[in-house]
Amino acid sequence: MHIADIAVFLFVVVIIVVSLLSNVVVVICFLYNPEIRKQVPGLFILNLTFCNLFLTVSTMPLTLVGLINKGNPGSSGFCQTVGFLDTFLTTNSMLSMGALSIDRWVAVVFPLSYHSRIRHRDAVIALAYTWLHSLSFSTVATCLSWVGYHHLYASCTLCNARASDTKTQFIIYTVVLHSLTFLMTLIVLCVTYLKVLKVARFHCKRIDVITMQTLLLLVDIHPSVRQRCLDEQRQRRQRATKKISTFIGTFVVCFAPYVITRIVELSTPGHISPHWGVLSKCLAYSKAACDPFVYSLLRNQYRKTFSDLANKILKRSSFNSSVRRVENGRATDTNNTKPTQ
Image (cartoon, rainbow, N blue to C red; front, side):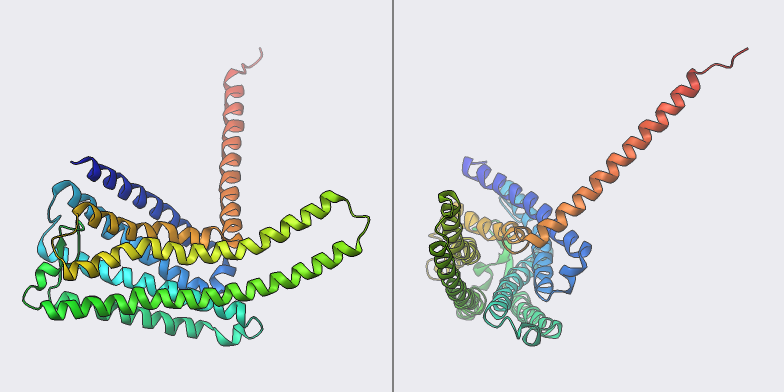
C-alpha cells in the first residue's frame, strides 16, 4: 500500500472507532434520561444518530476493504445494496441537520410559542419527509443500476461509469440530488443559524448594557470583580458565534469537498486524483464522528446524563468489589480459625 493509502486507512479506522463509541453514548443517554426523550429535538438527534451508526457499520468497513484489495469488496448485488444505504443514510443525515437548525431557530426566535409551533407530531411529519426524500433518490439510483463500486472513492456508491448509456440522465440526477440535499440544507443552516446569532447578539447587548450600568453604580467594587464581569461579557459575545460557526463549519468542511468532487467529476472524469477522491469521501464519513459532539455530547444535559450514568456504574462496581473483598476476608478468617480443645 502507498503511504497515502495507509494514512487514509488509519484515518477511516479512527473515524469508525470514534463514531461507534460516541453515537452509542448518545443512544444510551437518550434511553436513560426521560427528559431528553420528551424533547422534540431528541427525535431528530435520534434519527441522525442511527443514520451515523448504520453508515459506520455498513459502508465505512467496506471502504477499508476497498483500500486493501483495490477493488470491489463483494459481489455486484451486495455492493448495490451498500450503495443504496450510502445514498439513503447520507441524504437522511443532511436533512436531519436541517430539521435541527429549524427547531433551534423556532426555539430562539419564538420562545414563548415554541411548544405550540413545534410538537412531536410536527417532528414526525418532518422525519417522514426526510425518509421519503432519501428513499426516493436512493431507490431511483438503485433501480437504474447507477450504484456500484467506485474506484475513485474506494467505496460502493453512485458510479458514473455504470451510467455510460444514460449519461445525461445521470448528470441531471446528480445535480438535483446535491441541490436538494447538500445545497438546500446549507441554505437552511445559514439562514436559521444566522437569525439565531442575530437574536443572541441582541440579548448580549441588553445584558452588556445592564452590566455596565451596574458596574458604574457600584463605585466601591473591587477591580478583580469588575474585570471578571468584563471577561464574562466578552465570553458571552463569543460563545454564540463559536457555536454557530461549529454547526455550519463542520457541515461545510465535511461535505463540501465530496459534493464539489462529485460535480467536477461529471465534467472531467478521470482527471481527479484517487487519493483526493478517497480523502473527500473520508471527510464525508468524519461527519458521523463529529455529529454526536456537535449536537449532543457537548450540551450540558447530555454531559450530566453521561456523568450520572458513569458514576452509577462505577459506584456499583466499586460496591460489588468491596462486598467481594469482605466475603473473601470472612472466608479466609473462617478457614484460618481452628476449633479450641
